[in-house]
Image 1 (cartoon, rainbow, N blue to C red):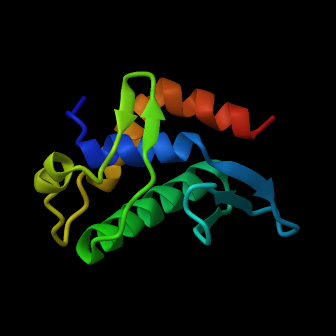
Image 2 (cartoon, rainbow, N blue to C red; image 1 turned 30 degrees about the vertical axis):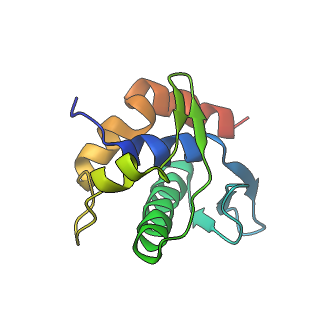
Image 3 (tube, rainbow, N blue to C red; image 1 turned 45 degrees about the horizontal axis):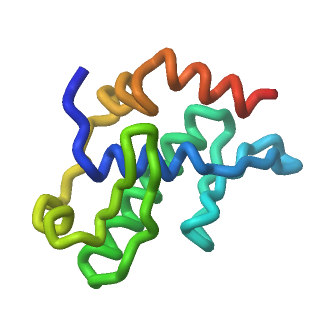
Length: 124
């Protein structure tokens, strides 16, 4: 499994806080309380989660470029604060995503087993 960056860990921590609802057209709608106005939709759980990942990554890039503060995220390993000088110095946003689409499916939320458990939680 590839090593994840601080941004990927942050995005995954934010995704773990996601709230969900099923729309009338059976689309899954995901929001994250710390990111008001950010809404991801998909026809199924994996597509909605991929969209949420993409939107969160974009939100972080915009905040980084404009100097806006980001909410802190907490994980089992501790706090992730992208607002520190050290974290901002470590960020290198380019025109690329940190992981490819195929890698994203395999490392998503800690790997396929954790992804499956995460999806099962949404299907309840």
